[in-house]
Image 1 (cartoon, rainbow, N blue to C red):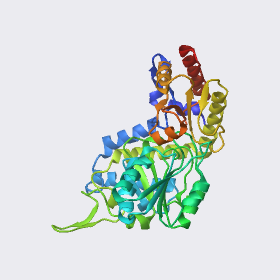
Image 2: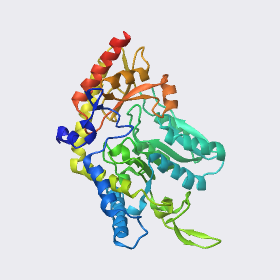
Image 3: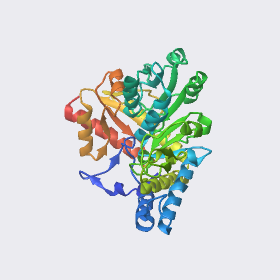
Image 4: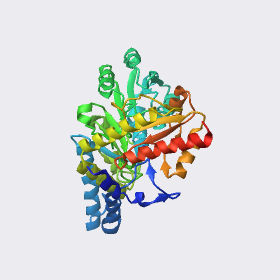
Length: 407
């Protein structure tokens, strides 16, 4: 894989920021978009634009076929046997809320328990928190250990028949920790609990096979895997999707409507009310095709080498605290750190003057930062277009911050 050639296929890298080439290290927030994705969406609007599943004319048929082809592509991409188990959503947040307000709301009773972890993004915490308070469920948290890993002994002790759902991240968006999902899923299923996996930070970086993983639902966003914003995926086991009512109502999610009664369509249409984001779906399909063309072995080899390089560089710097595991083994493509004596927001502002884009703040994981004992961190996250030169520029940025603030 020629990374330099890949970077050339991303138009945004032709920009200069404050006179500097763009060093983009915020792919965990949103990844940049290659020409192939932009061209696919442009072509849809220019040549095929119509409302999917509605018009019987040529454009309508083409739009429907394009959307359903991407549904099949997504199923193949994540190792699902049945394309009808793929539901298009607005993103990971929409997918998790879909499970919360359909299956969970229909099946959990007062006193039932939902378990999430202390690693979770707000999208996989706040929905359960709000419903638990409203419906008198118990919400519990798998604690993290000193190195940021999940405490599986705690989980073993707390998994009882009262636990109906375990909802956990595939890869932490702050620490890069990758929980041992096969073990967690096996333990949860042993007591009859279902498992939802938030794969937003994993889907662009490694292969996911839901059939082998054994989870019950998995969610992810298109914009974190080089696709457009506003499109995401919920995959769920067919039986669980059929056993859940819809939670949005409108066109194209019905089988029959009478004045006094409505019969709803089978999944996935049941959960896709209204006009679909057809251009976004087409863009997602183009992103999947690009990842397949590059190949997982090349992607993983490149990104793991960059994580190792970045971890080595950052941990060698004095006055820099790196959070979570310091080894690149089994580590995601994010590294969070702080510079002693300098607020994360000030670090990011100085970085920006050098054309370096990083995230600074709590990264939608405030409880985790409370556990870490800090209000905010600086997060550098890696994509397939990053190089060692980007990491070297990050290190130069850290040294400039230390010089400016005399720390």
